[in-house]
Amino acid sequence: MKTRIDKIDKNKICEASIQAAGEILKDGGLVAFPTETVYGLGANALDEEAAKKTYAAKGRPSDNPLIVHIARMEDLEAITTHVPEVAKTVAEAFWPGPLTMIFDKSDLVPYGTTGGLDTVAVRMPSDEIARRVILAGGGYISAPSANTSGRPSPTTAEHVAEDLDGRIEMILDGGAVDIGVESTILDMTVTPPMILRPGAVTKEMLEELIGEVEVDRTLIEADSKIVPKAPGMKYRHYAPKASLSIVEGKLEDVISYINREAGEKIAQGYRIGIIGTTETIEHYHCGDVKCIGTREDESTIAGRLYGILREFDADEVDFIYSESFDAGGIGSAVMNRLLKAAGHHVIRL
Ligand code: TXA
Ligand code: MG
Image (tube, helix red, strand yellow):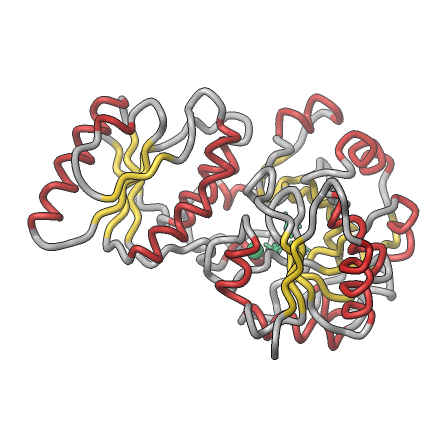
């Protein structure tokens, strides 16, 4: 299949591209589009066959449910059986935005979309291109991250093309995304609500609004015997080709440890990648050193994370050493993804 790639400007959205995307979606085809978190692989969420195509294009196990994206609050009712008051409060505060909520599903949503579950994950993105695509496609668009299953999520259209060129009908290239890690997932079918995946809407932000919020303990512990509540979180997502170690401790100790290890590995003939920050970058002496952002502003780190992991894949490094980042704010989402990419391999100094 030839994939049509249209550049699209957020500030001057081309109606013809949106219409073309809408037609493909209504026809049961696949269109990748930017959202504020990561690029999504859109399909008609109410069409079981379209869901099958999504799983096939991504090479994703079909028990891993898709998030249904909507653009209008009034569209929530038709796909759910019950929306608790507290969810309305959360929606008012954080929709449109980087938050997904889980509800009991109505019969309108096929099991093919929910991976056989009786619940449905719903998100209303704020990205204007995403909103226009959703409306043009009929209002209910399933969109997993637009990567091959097991690769880092795409934060640019080039990342999408790397994985899916020739496998989907269209890519809308709206440039780099704003946030860079996937939405927070909040399960509203339990009391108190539970975070199944950390993202830009943090536990602290939610608790300030609605009181106690729990966190799925599988997100915190590396114990493989506990099954996470979001089926997708059990897979070794976000995995770079190289073996990745996170080094924790006082920054100066971390730097000397990484320099020493990298030096030894290079002497043995290996290629080494190092993930440092604006504050530390000049202290690394060898290897392929990449700056992920500044410790002063963790959103810069979130924005570069997946891109850096992809660059190291392309560079074919054998080992990657990364500094650790504080787990406050969006830092918890960054550390959650980094820990998964590292298979929870942490060196504590
Ligand atoms: O930011 C995002 O959420 C992006 C953009 C494109 O919107 N989408 C995204 O989708 O990250 P995906 O498919 O890559 O991740 C969806 C996650 C998976 O871990 C899946 O298991 C979980 O959401 N999920 C979906 N429906 C669920 C449900 N009913 N119950 C529990 N977990 C669910
Ligand atoms: Mg994904």
